[in-house]
Amino acid sequence: MRLRYVFGLILILLGGTVLANALGMADFSPWHLIVVYFWPVVFLLIGLMFFLGARVWSFSRIIMGLAFLAIGGLMTANRAGWLHIPAEKVWTLFWPVLLIVFGLQLLFSSRRDGRSWAILSGISRQHPGWKLRSSDYWTILGGVHLDLRTAEIQDARTTLEVTTVLGGAEILVPDDIRVICTGTSVLGGMQLFERAYGGVYTSHEAANGPVGDSVPVVRIHCTSVLGGVKLMAR
Image 1 (cartoon, helix red, strand yellow):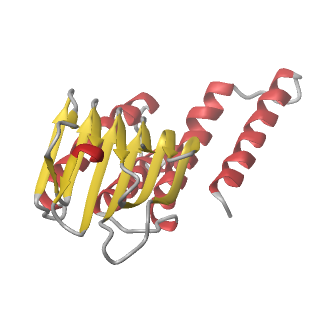
Image 2 (cartoon, one colour; image 1 turned 135 degrees about the horizontal axis):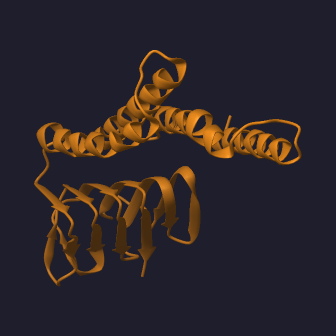
């Protein structure tokens, strides 16, 4: 079942319950419903979709999926009475988990020719002649801007891993190389060439450029949480 159908059913049930409450047919606090029932399910579903919806496996996808499953599981255990943690305390645990996620990426992410990271700032590669090699780029509260049109491609096959939290990624690509992008966005939006997507969770793949043995191929894996991804050919 597609994720949008699942979330659609959840929203209908939530809206119906709130409507029944407004009409005097039920006695539930909307805030109570959202905190207690809605968000645990949302986090668990997002975590599952990082695994079930994977077209290409990457370290960031696995770690992000585990992080959302951990938060959703913690909220569910708290709701079931197995734990006794105030709801606001559960939310404050979300941000330390994200920091741990990025720490794990530093330690265990695949070793490539280059790795760039930034916190409260951005990463930009757009000056003429910059070297395009297989690399990891990730930021917290910042963005990634890559202009492949001005890059010198070093290898016939290049893989880029781009991960942002509370930020976005913008990648410009030329029309004379083959670009294959797998993009995942949580609570944000995504534009892959001419098509745009958005929602609580979305994951899509797109390709652009000529096909041939002599054509360079760049594979891009983008993951964005509370942000967006924009990939454009010019």
